[in-house]
Length: 119
Image 1 (tube, helix red, strand yellow):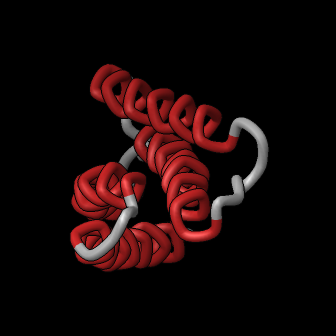
Image 2: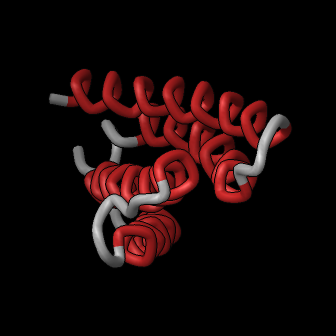
């Protein structure tokens, strides 16, 4: 199980980084305001997913924090990218729900410093 979640987080680290750089490039060559907004968010979270991959095996709280951030990022960034490229929403309230999940995941990450690690 630990190896599976590490692979998942590493996959999303690479995918987030690649989508971030693609978003930066696309935003520089057209009228894609949301792509310019989402690119630094994706790039920052790419690095974070590497941290989640490394630390999730040591702490159940970090594991779940990473899952919340991952789901939140998919919803938030996915909605903004879809809006920019197609004019359609992922679903109503996808970006706010995703943002809320990311905030919750980051708060759980902070709290994991005070929660004993799983053994």
